[in-house]
Length: 429
Image (cartoon, rainbow, N blue to C red; front, side, top):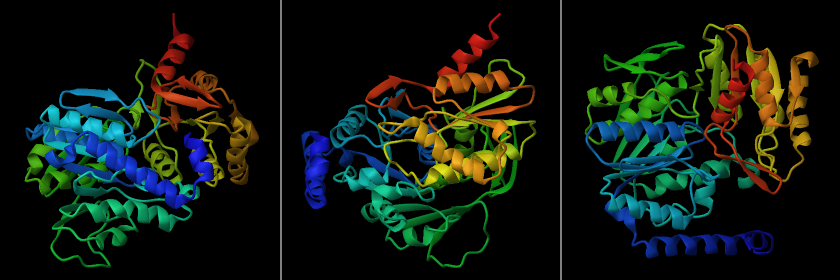
């Protein structure tokens, strides 16, 4: 039915159809967002981590919290991995989840808001009080028609949330989001002391003295020392977004420091798989050029011998432009590359890998230093077989996603579990 509608109905009719569904979902569940303080987090990367960080800070401050992200769902004391192959659920499930948060006496609801969700009016009839902007980079361009349309879709969240805006001042697109009206604005930065724009009454949050290692990241905010037990300097920016949210709600830096220091990992986000091995295994969701750069730069700055990267690219005619770009980035930072399935959908898997390979070849990467193994499990096994002391094995593209779509089959999948299973098969006594 969905495919029929998409194929034969004009866009304005489809848009109205989605709008009506959003209204019906809110109506059936009694417009539950009006009884919550709803926070929307949007951007190209970092959304799930920011949702998690915000939730932990609010809980540390004594509030009851619920959230919906590509990583997980949480309602009060219950938390579980997102079982769906989408970040922002459909209107009825989203409203039902908000209703359950109200029933569980949650004070705050934190929602990861996507451009696709906005196009389909999933954000409608949700009473957003706060909007958080993590940053923007090209993605879903085929779906939106242009980067400007993609950015415009994100902007609709800020148009609807009129109380508090929290913005990444280091992102080149921030001026677009600063133009939307809000009673309070918070801006965070890890890079700048001066800006080529002025915002009246902007509350500035800045990190200083950033130091990274394989054990985590240290930095200061207003001379208060913060510690993240996570990899990736980009997590400082994610932490600043969450700290800014805390400050907007009257939560002290000390409470935020304590909450963030308790987080040992974000599942599927620069997650280290520890099996007693003498090399490092990291699973991460990275699937866009900017997130690839962030992950690879993190590893480059830390002690290691070789980098073995294992990845593919999504099918379904999604962002085909980025496939050779991912290949070039991987070639720039990797010592060995293994290309494999990610979610080919109805595209021929080999054609997707060929497109990535084109970028690898253009980067001048030696043919003997990469392989194409469509079967993702076999590719992971090969990478683990190759790894030696102090190497880093990166498994990129899926993070905690619980399924993989190949043709018309949806199979259970979790990169972290597959890595552990293949490691045990290889190294069992």
